[in-house]
Amino acid sequence: MSERDDAFGAAAGGASSRPRRRTRPEPSPAQRALGLLVRREHSRKELLQKLTIRGVPVADADAAVARMVSEGWQDDGRFAESLVRSRAMSGYGPRRIRAELETHGFDGDKAKAALEDSETDWARQARDLVRRRHPDALAGDRAAQRKAADFLLRRGFTMDQVRAATRFDPDDP
Image (cartoon, rainbow, N blue to C red; front, side):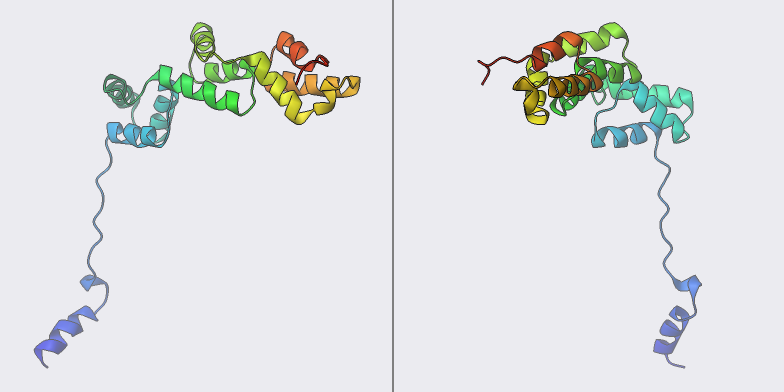
C-alpha cells in the first residue's frame, strides 16, 4: 500500500475523517439584545419580553437592556417617534397609535407626548385618506360620507377629525 492510498484510504473511511463543525458559543444576553436592536427599534418592554422568551433569565435580561439603554442602542423616545411616524404614514389615527404605544409599555402621558411631538396634522391626514379611499364622500354623497367616517373611526381618528375630513366643501381642491 502506498502513502497515497493511506492518505486517501483514511479519508474514505467515513465520519471520523470529516472536519468537525465548530460550535458557536452561546451569545450573551447583551449580544442577543444588540442582535434584536440592529434589525429594528424596540421598546424597553418589548426587548425584555423577547429576551426572556429566548431563555435569558429575567435578571440578566434587565441588565442587558440597561446596558443597551446606557450605551444608546435602545431609546424609548426614538422608538416612539419611529412608531408614530410609521403608523401615521400608513394611514392610522392618533387613537390607534396611542393604543399601540401603550401595548409597548408607554403610559398615557408618554404616549400623548409622543403623538404631540410628531407635529402631525391629523385632520389633514384624515382628509387625504378620504380623498384617496372615498372620493364620493367629498362630493356630498351621504352614504359615502358614512362609509368614510366609519373607515376613519376604525383607523383611530377622533370624531372631530372625522367630521372635518368628511364634510363637503366645494372650495376644497
